[in-house]
Image 1 (cartoon, rainbow, N blue to C red):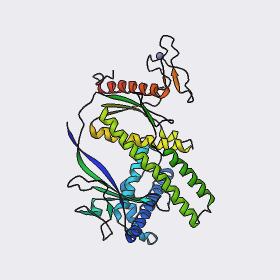
Image 2 (image 1 turned 90 degrees about the horizontal axis):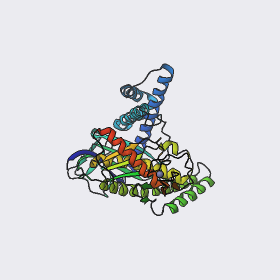
Image 3 (image 1 turned 30 degrees about the horizontal axis):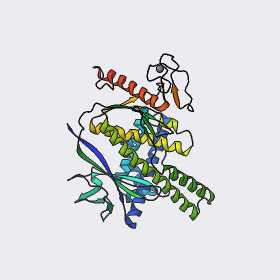
Image 4 (image 1 turned 180 degrees about the vertical axis):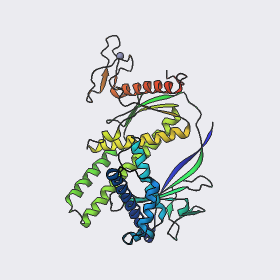
Length: 385
Ligand SMILES: [Zn+2]
């Protein structure tokens, strides 16, 4: 068993005083403004003059902006979150150029929500008390879980969601022991009717109460649509809707954390499909939108946990026809409409019949094992019997 130093984020609810809240809201606003101005600048430079602008250049721009009379208010907040906003933009560009994300977008002005990131020089940490730059009192935090002994956060992010709740996330480096190697291997298919299907035949369903929560969201959406835009009642309805969304998201996150922990404990090799989540989001159905959001967070949680605990996560090409292939004999069929819930192999000698998603999950596992063999060059390490 080896031990690796990893960064782990610990997130807590926090309760700023009204003075702190006001100061934080101003910081969020300035960070958003700086981000948007830099995006506008970089975009225009590229399209007008074919110039690419670096992070360092935008950082120099920030110094210039702070000297402008109309932007003097930027000096009232800590400069670190503003710099971090420029770093995020830089990251947005680099992931875009690697083909991993969409082109960076302007951050919209929201009623309540926003965030600000503080690095080591912009907060003090002493005996578990966190005081942010430009603030005099420590932030009141609800410590819902224990931090590792002697932990000192390297980065602190304060955020507020659309429901008005405040959070603080502490990035902490700690030693995480990898788990002992296991024999298990599993393929996972992302579905719509059930959340996930495993190659073992197990179906992971949505968290309990989700249907009821979804009905609540729909009702709140309706309520909101009846209110006059900009009125006080509209605001209230907006917050109520955001709370309903937050509830679904919280339950989902909890569900996904338990599930991913179980999967990495039980398996050495985990194969998933590289679904294009953004493409999937095209449909407007609420259930579907939530399922898509879950899939992408499932993937990212699984990725870091596999990394922490020394597991192999294999991503299978999404263009492989995993739904249209017989998992028993490998016969490829012409079409497999979504409404068809059972795979029936047309090969008369085979005749394999199986639940559509289980069949797909088995193929994902098989493809994953091929890819892992190609990557290692020394044969499959763990053969699933
Ligand atoms: Zn077959």
